[in-house]
Image (cartoon, rainbow, N blue to C red; front, side, top):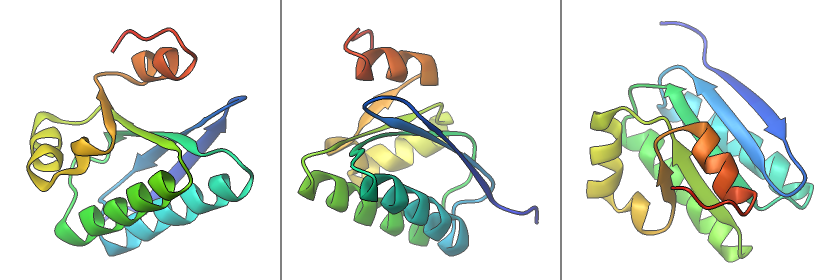
Length: 119
């Protein structure tokens, strides 16, 4: 099992979080910690690029749901990008995509968050 890593890139109005590894309780908590740190700075619009996280378990999903709830409470916006077909289907079944957007690529998400909607 490889170490879970998170990379954050902040823009003017939003941030992109790229995860690398299995999103379970540890990976999910690392993502949640980064999301909360970003929201504490006043940025409530987040893009989660999960290209390097091809497996998400039920605990990881529950943590992502908590983040969605926190973002919605702050009138923010959350998008997922670069999901594998299996993870995208799982997120849809679990209801995550009712409250978060889905983009095929990080670049299309960034364009949409910059006001150039091309989802």
